[in-house]
View: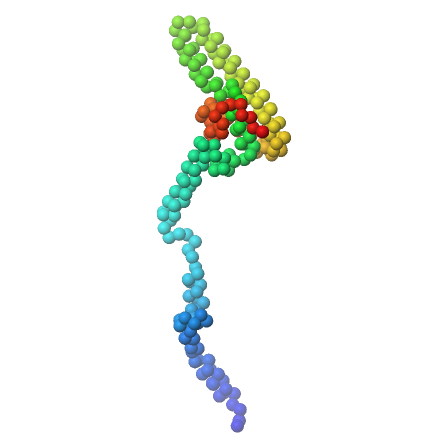
Length: 204
């Protein structure tokens, strides 16, 4: 028999045109045709942006509000575990306990200044010569409060350095500002609330 390359090529073309029949059963044997790769990829795709953005934002706001309420309740009750991350720092807890344990002149400055100003306005009409001494008294109290805070921070800084290292008093820690601002507030109005009801309970 003579070999004919044309016939061989025609036979190969005819064989290539025959469609490949899909298996009646896939590898799992569930009686379904094997899905094409394109179909599988389409099923695995997930949208990056949710379809309902408004509902998604509402859910996120609710979660954020719940977290804020939980943190606020913790600050009111003194529960350090559930406070914001900044308030849970060990040296900040120590600062709060230290300031809450002492009598701070600065915390009474606003009430004292308010009383002095009212007294100054009251006596101006009848005893104007007393207005100047009252103002001098107010400024003297302010200077005394600033000196008291300065001495307080000097002692507290040494204790923080010994207990927590230089990171507790570094510039980025804002420990000085945190201590001063707490010392300026009346004890009952401080947030987070003092963990002990009375003064004198010094931190270890």
